[in-house]
Length: 168
Image (tube, helix red, strand yellow):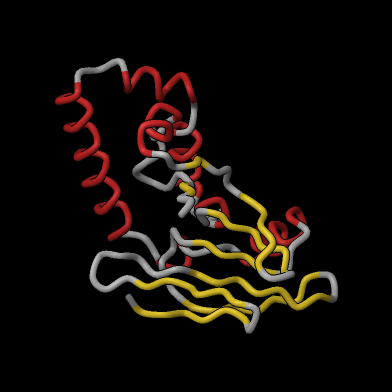
């Protein structure tokens, strides 16, 4: 079974060597797919959280190839400590921030539907699972949000009959 991988918050350094060694295929964010006749955008979801300006700045830094090379040039113990520190800082940062700021911005969602030319979007990042409808340029568009996997997890099942959210 083919396995495709899209970078997220903590795995942005996964590169071609890992993909080759494991047999996965790295996919872009966003990636367009046809799911039973519906053009669907698969995306991580963080680019939709435009009200969280501090996170967006950090995202740009972490995706910069020069910054990534600087990090990868450090000894593994130093990288692990750096990752643990960034994780702790992230948790502290989120604790003091309004949920609305960390969620998707409706204007960014509508713009993503326009840019992708799709009627369905599937993403994680915010991990507030559910189905959300939008009217974009006279079309009904649906955004599905995947749950996180910290406690229970879940997934979407897409078939010719439609989309169903299922618990793991």
